[in-house]
Amino acid sequence: MARTFRGQALNTTKLLNATNPGAIEEAAAIICRGGLVAFPTETVYGLGADACNPLAVARVFEVKERPRMDPIIVHVADPESAPLYGRFPEQAAALMCRFWPGPLTLVVPKTDVVPPIVTAGLDTVAIRMPAHPAALALIRAAGRAIAAPSANVFGHVSPTEAHHVAAQLSNRIELILDGGRCAVGVESTVLSLTESVPRILRTGGVPPEALREVLGALAWSTGTQDRPEAPGQLMRHYATRTPLEILEEGDLRAKPRPGERVGLLAWVPPKEAERYAAVEVLSPSGDLREAAANLFAALHRLDSLLLERLVAHPVPEQGLGIAIMDRLRRCSAR
Image (tube, rainbow, N blue to C red; front, side):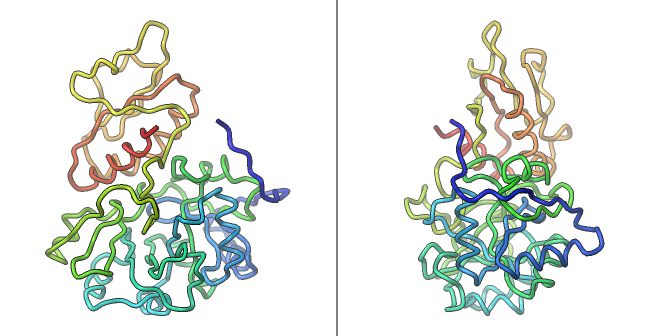
């Protein structure tokens, strides 16, 4: 079912190449006056607002049609500014040294400068330092942290290219900064540091194996949260409008019925490609990093073709494959 935006629409949404002279400064000025800017990160495009301006953050929820119980990640430009927004335990230093800037979000007790709307009323805050030059330049030019979920309508496939943002949020926000295609392609790993053993709340761009090299012991969040501790924990998320099913070995659902238009999301080049109305291959070489970078763009393309259904081959659940399968399972939940 199509969703109708109930907020106040803007006449235009400006699209600027992030490398254009003055583009970052213009975007920063919008953030500083309480506006919204979509900007590139290495994971997905974010929808940014001044993290300490509750009215601006409230508009992020409105524009995305996002439930207020779902917290938002605060983006900083350097580790030195992070303690302004959260209280970090000793083990955070090693994680920042290894993974920042990069796709790791740390959940820690919040400070009083963070408005409750950012954390969905929780006493913890999710903080990360993105690894994209345009994102870092924007945060520095604005002179403040930027609260940013993915720049799409809530629950739908995350955007990894500027035109994905424009297709959903044009005339809802002031500016889209085009920084090209996102290199990682899946959202950040979210790690809670609020307990004695760090706990993964969301799998993402930093694989669990890499975290164990730094931390040793590591716990996992159990199940879907009725009250999320971090973004991406709801059962149905990252969803295509076209129904998607994940296939198993020998699955009869893989074969389209006569006249049925089915799209295939394949891990590697499939033998049965001629059966399908459209095929997207995540990685011709079987590389999980390439597959992660291609995942959301491939889903966007398949979803735009007005097919009857989509089927997906599973990928190996190791490294970034864990995050890929998490997104596919949430996409297929009905």
